[in-house]
Amino acid sequence: MLLSVSEQMFPQEVLEASTPVLVHFWAPWCGLCKLIMPQLRQFQEDWRGNIKLVAVNADQSLKLATTYRLQTLPTLIVFDRGQVLYRLDHFQGREDLRRSLDTFMASYHKQSLQASKVLPLEV
Image (tube, rainbow, N blue to C red; front, side):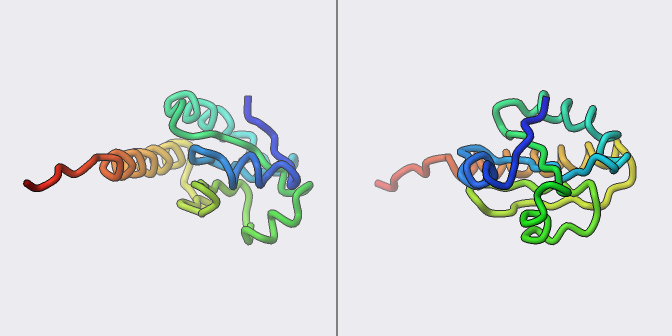
């Protein structure tokens, strides 16, 4: 189940989160938004502990929709410590969506691992 986030909850749940957050901007009238939900749930399960997944109803969160310049739904944005890392607002089907998200996560995870390595001291 996706955590539904309001404008009031957005700073705490997304911008201040200790792990990256994938925000699914959607609307009740958006058929494609509903259609990709199984892929998003599976993505969340596969990357458990590495990313948090939340949903924002764009119709009820017009300030966020304006702030992040949503032009189409669904729009998926990955945030890390308040910064936008990745944005996906066009994709060609479910497989393309999943491939794009997995490619981003693999690259991000690899960079995170490399950044956390401690370089040996020279003697």
